Image (tube, rainbow, N blue to C red):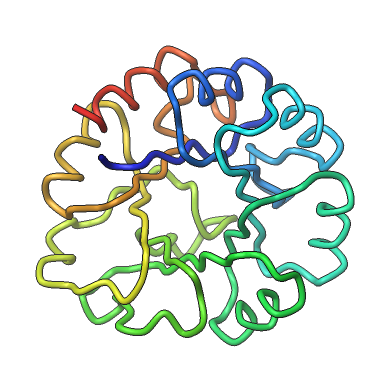
Length: 206
């Protein structure tokens, strides 16, 4: 069964809804420019609502070690999702001892990695537009046919413009073992809609 990651959770309603649908991963965004940013103390309070359950994934964009350390001092994370180079991802993995998933932006088949380069998993998504203020979460879908024939070198998840209306087609087209959604289950920018989370999960697992 395809796994689900609900990313950018920053309020109780969205967090509770992700737990209720049995999402395997909950994404907590620690990149301040994002509308889905959550402060470490607030993320800790959300996580405490449901001990156990989905794995907690911390999203960081080009972080300093001190930034990650400050978050880990506030709450336990199970994984790190990083927008960094492969070399930097390896360094962070060694420093903090947590599984690392590295985001890879794709515009052509040649962008798809054939080596995990030390990461535990890869998040495959469209490259952000040149004028974007953040590297992901831009509600842009990728050309799923680019993944035809790609042999993933490690665990991976598909992201980018996924919604309750297209996630089933995305899974059929790519065989993605996990799908990651943020803006596609929001009723307003940065505000999750529990009904859309439920609809996304139902579509992904149908």
